[in-house]
Image 1 (cartoon, chains in turn blue, purple):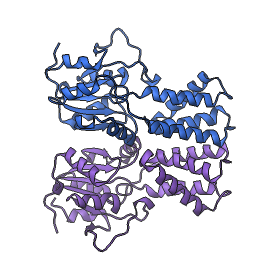
Image 2 (spheres, one colour):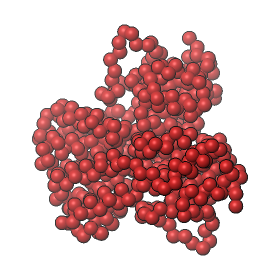
Image 3 (cartoon, chains in turn yellow, cyan):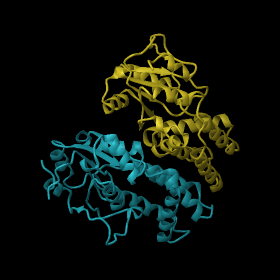
Image 4 (spheres, helix red, strand yellow):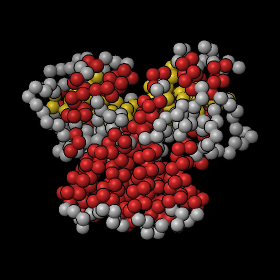
Length: 232
Length: 232
């Protein structure tokens, strides 16, 4: 199969271009260890996820909301007995996460170099604006992209807005990403192309159950395989 | 004077389209009152501003960074003796701020209605992505705008990127806003038009000293006067 109509290819960023979720998990683990006097680590992890979900509509995606949700969880699970020192540790974890080095995933640079010769490439990602821009700048691959679209969410309506903004038809748009929920299903639903490149670690919020009636989509074990699907 | 080349008009959002800074100040005042056992209110306000400036490169602009900086300031000024209850109050203030109603500034709706007939209007604002999108949605004026540009900063390079993204020349771009530092000087520096509509309350970070050698710019007492400057 060769896809001939594609004009714009959008890449998800976190865990598609570079490593992200393992860093969040690492901080979440430290957070759970910090509060083990109050609850077993797996219970704290559950409480943190609950707080994040409760706050999602208010804070949106990204690292700052994550830090705020850790602080809120610490207050709750400690029944407001948490010390100021622990709160300070949490703020420190957040700053550590923001300043992490960027590690590109295997094969990314070659894929971008090849595709950028023929296609308009954009980054389409959720998260904090400044944080994602900083990661892209540090990544050394910013010059392959026409621009970055930071999206407050990745639902059908958000992709419709994106495609309108790009002045193209849905069939001319391809999304590549690691989240079936965010990068694949809503994109297929509006008649665009979606390519799934799974990553070994996925945030619980991005998990979906696939049902037998669901649309089929292209899944690649390695992003380099995309070069076989598109005319170059 | 009538400006005849303008194609795209960008509006700053906070304190240009709707009230914002007084709400931040209101929360900052509550925060200072909360910590008065440790320091006089005006000293706390100074400490908070210092924390915000220290964190600006990491957190960027917007309400979530503001909340995180309040928490950090509380830890510091209390010498880590602050109670969990106070931290909880601060998180509550933040959520209150995020959920504030939107109050449009005088004359905005009429101006947008008139200008949208002939010009492409966009919103160009700093702050948290989701937060600014939520405000625009609640404002009831979203339909006048072609789209929203949430900018991580408003320096010359950011405006150059914006104009490239809009596919226009600098002389075809006009920025309208309340901050001389963010909405006026960098816009004039790249050869575009800038119109200053002052607002009675300005965040200390946006203050600039105007020097006699600075470029002159158009200043309006009320945004409605813009209708006299542009062909309709």
